[in-house]
Length: 607
Ligand code: AGP
Image (cartoon, rainbow, N blue to C red; front, side, top):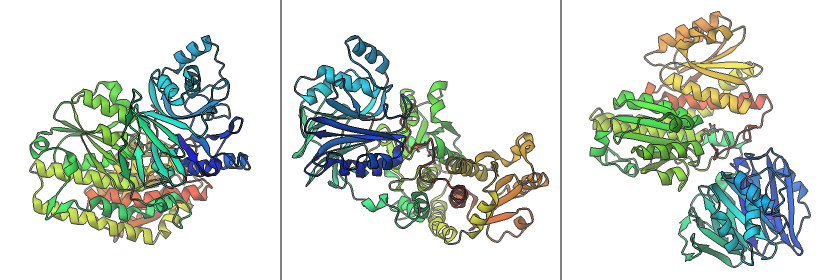
């Protein structure tokens, strides 16, 4: 959620650091800061608010400096304020560092350091690391950082610079990403590839408890004992343009429009000569046949993709599925056996709750399969097998295209399980695969005319609360529709299985209360219509998402958003798109910044 950048080379550092921070801003943004080396020490500027504030404060700062570190912060310890922003410093102000993660033993370390005379200027866990480095520093920053790191418990990505060692930055990590690259103008470090590929497309992802020492000439790598090691380079083949808006007013809309491509890319190469292939699953046919339970663990939107998968796996493969909120999973002593397939779903691949759930599942002997969007992410590394969702970098905080990628990947997994269990023939698999591939074109049709969605949004924009209802698959997708609306428009929204309305929530209905009903063609269509009527009778304003050609629905709804006809199993894919656009249209009408919703961060790397 926080972002780290660092640069040492031949160009003015401040400009490079600010540009890098702007690229990372989507990760968290309650404050930001830089520390650059200057003739007589370090010059540090920190500001609360967005990176733009920091950029203004840095105008004219140290134009001759060619070495520095920077950070965007999303507060965990200590309120968002200048004193708690990073970089954090040692007592003498000659050592500065930026940190992602949480130092779990910081209180105890702080006490020990205070007893040795260190003075603290912030409420952060990060500051203790600066003092630990200061304590250990003789004349070798790498040695001091190693010494400090050995005392830390928790997660950290750290970049440290020191006034006594011009042009040098030392970095290390534990459970928090650090990526490095060296280019013509110097050496770069960041917590995300996006901020280093201006230097080179050949990057190094630092391993846990490894260290790197950067200067203008290059980067040297060391293991935990300080022994030099050879780095493993990874070639990045996606373009920096993915991080730009490509002509759309915001990243969210750009990403919504990328969804047909996501479907196509996620399916590419999966059907080979009529056979569905997920080689990365890392499980033999015999092992798949033994699976007697599936447990999906995830958070937020990824959890909702899990709800969709439950419907598919249970109906196709006839295997019982539980979908678990990752933050609850490990605290309730879950039942996992060696024949349970645990599926961890995470866009970022670094959500702390999901990672903790994975490790709990492994301790209990489950086989863990990851579905993530980020190559080499902790979820990918901690799983026995992984599917990458091919959404490419998702910048908007609200997940859209990554959800689609997750649902399509989970659909493939459901088909593979059904085949292995002998519940789906090869012919059925091929037919389903073709229909699944067709959803790319169906999404394009939805995106080509959004008039009905915008009209419905106009009708709902001034509401204070809304319900999303549906049954079966429609219920699973309603949860995601409600989450999208609340996170970007700040309009209170709740989702219910439509039949639950009469057991309580219906009491809240009054004239004009928006009820968004997923009423696509399905075996429960008639039941959903009854639930819509119950709500409409009580004054609700009904927005229905229905199947093209459905004349009946017009009689029961104030606004109808039509989607192309697909089988019920694929309706989550088509219906999620208008619900994303509906949430965005309301948020824009309410003047919200859809890419940067308040209080949220793209990756939630703390428990
Ligand atoms: C989605 O719009 C949210 N930003 C959030 O619920 C997110 O899905 C959740 O934090 C899980 O993230 P992950 O998929 O990266 O693990």
